[in-house]
Length: 129
Image (cartoon, rainbow, N blue to C red; front, side, top):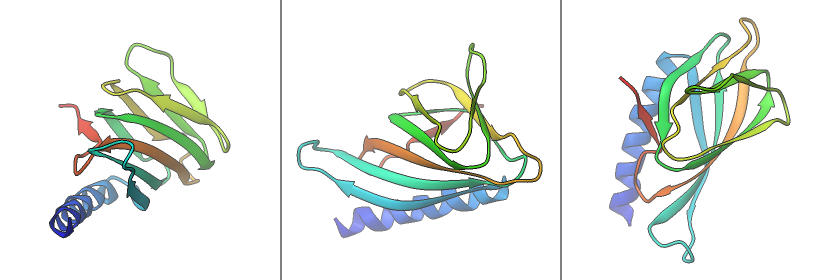
């Protein structure tokens, strides 16, 4: 168990560093396992996007729910119209759904929560080429 946590922490640190270079700052708030869901872990992240920051096309290997705390964000699934979310707004993205999201403001930050259930020790996000 201890080895898994060290590896997960290393991967998270690399991911956080890469994200911060693009104006994205994810922070893991909670991570836990539930015996009723073997091989899965639940994660809660608070992610901050700098003004104008964008997360380009990607998909998740798991279900993910976004909940906006501050600012205005635009989420767009491939082939669909963009969705604008403001504080209190939420959106579910299913596994494998290619999408992007960005901070709609050039002067205000965007802050949202991400609720994720993912395979233990696995990344939830896969970048598109």
